[in-house]
Image 1 (spheres, rainbow, N blue to C red):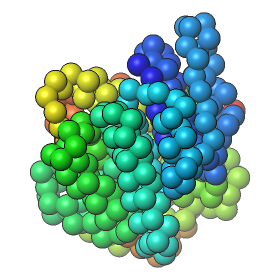
Image 2 (cartoon, rainbow, N blue to C red):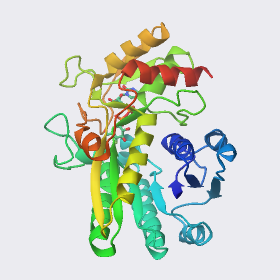
Image 3 (tube, helix red, strand yellow):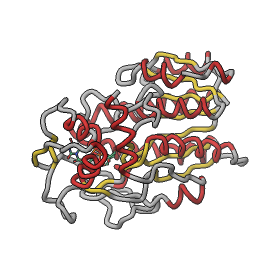
Length: 335
Ligand code: UFG
């Protein structure tokens, strides 16, 4: 199958590209390389020729209708996986237009071109941020969605659009609500490389390596056992697997129109201090840190129920241990 991967040069996108190739699919990557890396694609594409697969990179912008129409005219595809470009809650509070415009217009452009080209299979990168500040843990997909940030709002709006397009246009789509994607390709070829880096695990490892000042811990007065925020860390390979299973699930839908949401999380929560302790176990080194004020938009606790993805998609995470997740990230950072 030829699969369009929008944002395929990014962190999760590049792992997805590699996963598609290893599963015998041909990725057509569409990326403007503003935050993604062509070097990551070189790694992700490695070994494709031996499998008789010719992956493609098309440089372009989802916000440019001309780029998107040309892409669909020139590159026939069977399905679309849309990794949204911006995914930071705190940044979205400071720059709402960047998020509403980027996520809504980008998704609408892709959907219009896909439907025009009779491509009816679509996977969207949604987020745990759609839940806002949930009252019950673990969070099931049926929990109310009350986002508290433009990132979460925009993702929720795209989910609503997909649901309407299922009814009206026969679109078959799945929104995967990511919790905290972390870790790196176990072979050390791909990993997290954001600039600036805002995510906890890479920042912990960079602080250990002395590449940054001591880690800032954003708040120690949350209503959690140790006062720091609790999150659900899920290995990026397992996130990529969830997409592959979602793709298979959509392809198995014979009727017209389908929409479902699935949480992509491990089902286990760890506080910031517990993540640091795990990093110290894995690396054998101490994490220098200071406590600072809370970061805007951070809920105290976000832990997924992954039951729906396990039961409906057959998802079975291969890296359930936080130490193993950090170990793969550590290997990547040491490269
Ligand atoms: N944190 C620090 N110091 C850092 C970086 C992070 O203390 O240098 C803390 C944060 O305050 C948070 C936790 O570590 O409590 C995790 O933060 P990340 O930035 O790694 O990730 P987020 O929890 O902000 O992001 C995740 C998903 C988003 C989702 C969001 C919902 O990646 O897609 O949760 O709040 F939108």
